[in-house]
Amino acid sequence: MKKDLNKSQIERFSRQLVLKNIGPKGQKKILSSKVLIVGIGGLGCPAAENLVRAGIGTIGLIDNDIVNLSNIHRQSLFNSKDVKKPKVSVAAKKLKEINPLTKIETYKSRLNEKNINNIINNYEIIVDGSDNFKTKFLINDCCMKLKKKLVTGAISKFDGHVFTFDFKDKKTASLKNFYQERDISDDILNCEFEGVLGTTASIVGTIQANEALKMIVEIGQNLKNQILIIDLLNLNFRKVKFKK
Image (cartoon, rainbow, N blue to C red; front, side, top):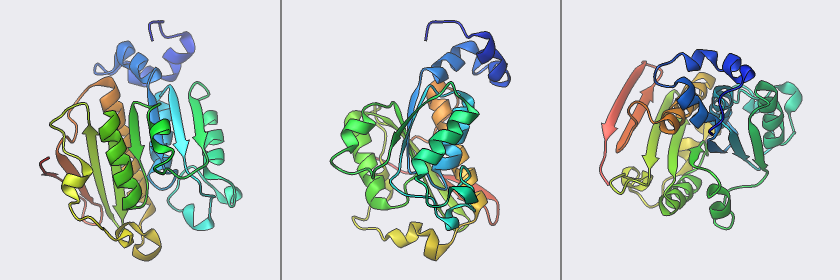
């Protein structure tokens, strides 16, 4: 984006523009970026909201589910009036109200082997808020093949995991280097049986958005070949290294 920021953009993003690590140059990168959110749930909602508030140029939302009453305690874009409505439609409307400058693209479907290449290829960064390992590994493999940047999150109970991958870097490990088992039970990520506190989802989703913004602006350190492990019950944050 070569054009200067207009008066409305300067006012809207004024608190980001004064940050030396961002400034007008960084904000222009944010405004021209394209991010796909996979899963508009406990992680996808706060991730999408924070990215839209920051000024992401284009946000893609993919989810085939409808809003259920049990979603509302942790999925921050929805309220009681949204029950039984498609998540992507409700989220798109509310995100547009937050920031009408952001282009919202919606996909009311489930990401699968047939559609994943065509969808992911349109975006530079993928934020994975899915709730099963089959989808996570599918996203991981596609991002590796297309050399995309990926921010993966997972939550259960009071715990969260965050990974960031830049697959343009040949030395970057992948999700499969950490979860080395071929078959992992999705009961690990099953909120219905394991339970999860709403604040856990909000914190991990917000960290995912933060990691995506850092990658866009190219500032700070990311989690290359590391996992961020969050224990919110005891308020412990630690990083663990793993290799390709």
